[in-house]
Structure formats: C-alpha cells, structure tokens
Image (cartoon, rainbow, N blue to C red):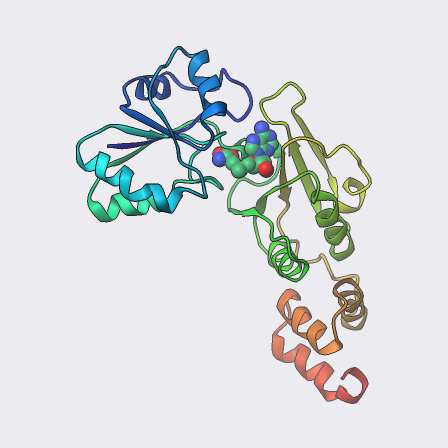
Length: 272
Ligand code: SAM
C-alpha cells in the first residue's frame, strides 16, 4: 500500500493524528530531503527508514519502490511541505501504482493553494490552479492572457523573486484586476495582501513563500478601450506586430473573432 501523507506547510502543529499513525506504521518513508523531513519526524517521535525521493531521482527510484510495494511493504510518500504531487514529486508513482493495481491512499492535510483560496475572499468555485508560472516571457504572457480571460479564480505558485515582474505585466494588461498575495501561510507572518494589480505592484514586501490569486474576468473589463486603443496597448505591452496583437485581441475580447478580423483586415493597409 502506498500512502500519500500530507505534512505541514509551515506550522509543525498542522499534521493530523491519522498522518502520524500512518507514518509510524510505515516500513519506509519516501521524502524529498531526508534532513528536512527527519526534523518533522523527530518532533513527533517517529523513527522509520527514510529514503530520498525527489524530482531528480523519481524515475530512477520508481521500479525499486514498486518492487517493495509488490512485496507487501507499507510505504508513505511525503514532500518538504504540504500535499505530495501538488508541484511536488509523486504524480508518476501514483500513475505507476494504478497501472500495477497497487492501492494508493491519500492522507489529507494542508495545501498552500487551498489555504490561500479560502482566505483570499475571492470566489472559491470555479477555480483553476496553474502551478508555477512559466519563466520564459513569451510563455508567461500567453499564460497571463489565459488567466485574465478565465471566468473564475486563478491560483498560481510563484517565487518572491519573480512576482514583481508578473504583477507588472498584469497591471499593464488589466490595472483594475483584483489580486491577492497570500504569503507565509500558517507561519508567524502570515499575510493576505489584497487590491487591484496596479496598487499591489507598488508594494515591496514579497518575501517568503507566496501564492498569487487572480480574480475572475469581468466582461466589462476592457469596455473603456476602443478596439484600436486595445490593439495599441497589446502591441506596446507584448512588443509584438499588429498582426500578432490582432490575434491576441481576438482571443481576449468577448466579440466574435470574425468581427475583429473583418474590422482590421478590411483596413489591412493601415494595420499590416
Ligand atoms: N506541495 C505543496 C502544497 O501542498 O502546497 C507545494 C509545494 S511547491 C514546491 C512550493 C510552493 O508552494 C511555494 O513556492 C509557494 O508558492 C507555495 N507554498 C508552500 N508553502 C507555502 C506557505 N506556507 N505560504 C505560501 N505559499 C506556500
């Protein structure tokens, strides 16, 4: 049996009785960093063999773990923080267990994205979780455009070093969009910073661990801009040709694509 055991995301007290029992009954505990996890286990008086299982060893370790599970061993997988498989190793192992007919039991507990969502004050359904935002500018822009047109709350994990760049881009695209920065969750300096993108970008305290939440798309959000003004804004923000900007415009304005193409293609001399 494979258990996916959720551990705290900051506050060591956030671990369930059931999680401790399962860890205490395991033959082996797989973890990302044995030194990090031994602190948690020691704190709870659990002494079990720890084996490293991180993103670089996942494929190498897989067969070994499956053999142990086939022998009938009880194995628990934990990560450095929170729920395994959520931007942490485990997804592949779970898929392999399912293929092999091996039981998988998740043991619930904290997850930064859920903690951030419920404390954000934004709509909790529907929501989409996009994990870490892409690092490359082009991919980041594309992802942000998808996020800005999503009709529900979007949740992203982001590093404190990159958050400013993301917020700047968002403030250019939709300055009034409500965003929430949930930082240092469950820790001493837990904080929810809420406001329009253009105000939040001015703040400087983006230290520590961060979850970024973005409010749903409003249909009136670009109403104040004419199509021509919007086209110019997209060109300036993304540094793309008019043709590329027309494609983006057709994607994000709630107007039939044909209408946009007709409008600009008709006067293509002016816009090409
Ligand atoms: N498996 C974890 C979970 O269940 O949330 C996520 C692991 S992922 C490698 C780490 C990212 O999760 C951080 O960069 C941050 O975006 C978010 N995170 C984890 N703990 C957090 C906390 N205490 N406060 C805010 N964000 C946190």
